[in-house]
Image 1 (cartoon, helix red, strand yellow):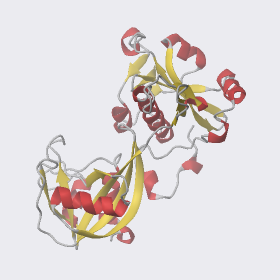
Image 2 (cartoon, rainbow, N blue to C red; image 1 turned 180 degrees about the horizontal axis):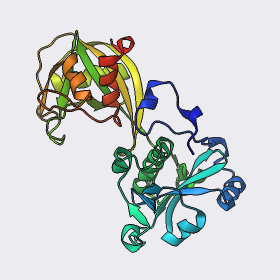
Image 3 (cartoon, helix red, strand yellow; image 1 turned 120 degrees about the vertical axis):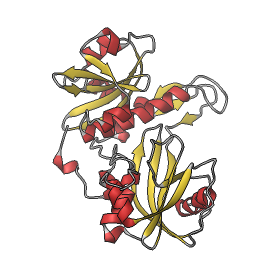
Image 4 (tube, one colour; image 1 turned 30 degrees about the horizontal axis):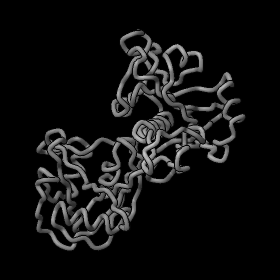
Length: 318
């Protein structure tokens, strides 16, 4: 499914899960005959998840993530299926196999179950397939946790080719959710603010993130989160790039922000540590050559994109 025309020039395309060339054909999701014809086509393929873990076929030294209808049927019953979209004449569906189905990685030597983060970091599939897998994982996560109507508690049914759940009792319609998260590189002159959480690998520092709250602009979310986590007041905020993040279903909105002061007051409940880093230090972290062995998130993460833009791209610096 690789197509060089999908390699976009926008900065968001540098992040993991962001390249997804599928034509989602959202205007045709409710056309049952159209979807049935796609399911019957020999070229149609499925991305398969066991719960929320991708299932891949072993092919020589590589992996094939695309299953035919017959291959899908051999895995067991489908718990949920949704139409993701089409590209280059290939219709792509996402299917979750039943929990009681045999563990594919144990039952068959030609299959492997591996978490999506590992699929991404190990480069087991193309960037385009990775983007579609992110789409599939987020969508199926929503289905697994929204089977009952939040309005009246009745079991809902799946419609619109997997993109809507409907309640027959109160007639409510429910749609997949995406949670906006701001992630920001706060700068002051030639220094930037990075922090680490206790769960991070030893020595890793990253940009500060935070969920956007109802009734809040992205800019105000940046200012609030930085003030809460690090005690720093922020002035100017600029958008730089974004990233679909399927852990579980977020949109990471990458911003740069200008600090109005430098005195840190770290919220120990949110951060284990935070400090100001020089541009040279961040460059060393990006090159895995920091003198103290400090590191930053990999290129997969938008935090890496924000840091690299500040270090290497003067046009992106605030």
